[in-house]
Length: 160
Image 1 (tube, rainbow, N blue to C red):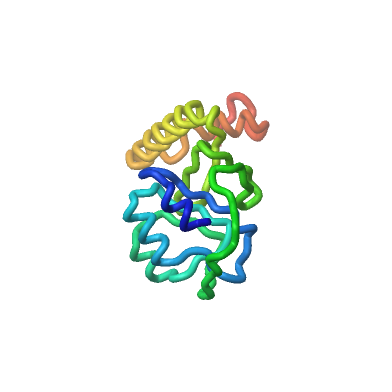
Image 2 (tube, rainbow, N blue to C red):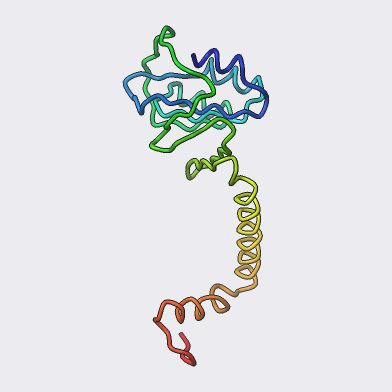
């Protein structure tokens, strides 16, 4: 079924595969993931093991898995495509926004995606401004006193 999902996918699609967290055999490796890259998919999230770790690092294609196992899978197990699933304990529905980086993967319900993207853009801009302030030598003076007051750790008029 994963081969079928790859064949049906469009450029930019993210494949999210419910492998039930199984680590006893890899469900994908270099061959299948090379096909995904060639088809210009956006990435693969797999709640199961993958194999060919060294080759996957060289492939430079976004793959998030529950682990690694050199043993290959069978190709004769049925499944469903474009149905709601659970991956890593998170519900995923077709059309949800799936974003991953080196820290992990987040799934955002489709109807919340526009708002989440706006909030993410604001967060990125705020952090860029903080990095600029740090580069100028301001490591915490503007926000830390207010945060400590809000937490009840610093009284009005007190300084650090």
